[in-house]
Image 1 (cartoon, rainbow, N blue to C red):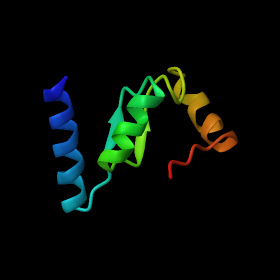
Image 2 (image 1 turned 90 degrees about the vertical axis):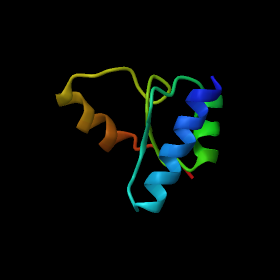
Image 3 (image 1 turned 90 degrees about the horizontal axis):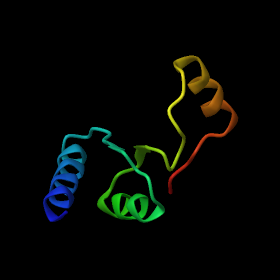
Image 4 (image 1 turned 180 degrees about the horizontal axis):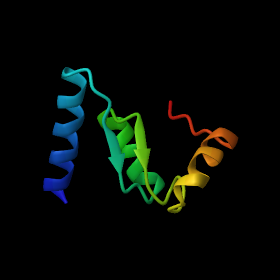
Length: 70
């Protein structure tokens, strides 16, 4: 667990310094989302946000209910 956290923190820091946008993948629980947000991630994907969808349905979902992370 500590290694995963260290890697996630390093990627977030590297993305920030390179002025890139990093996406935290695999968020399944609110606690994970909050910890990743604290590390600096502003974009994410995972079961917490939505279940896997066919490509054609993704645009409609995002247009109907965008998710904003503060």
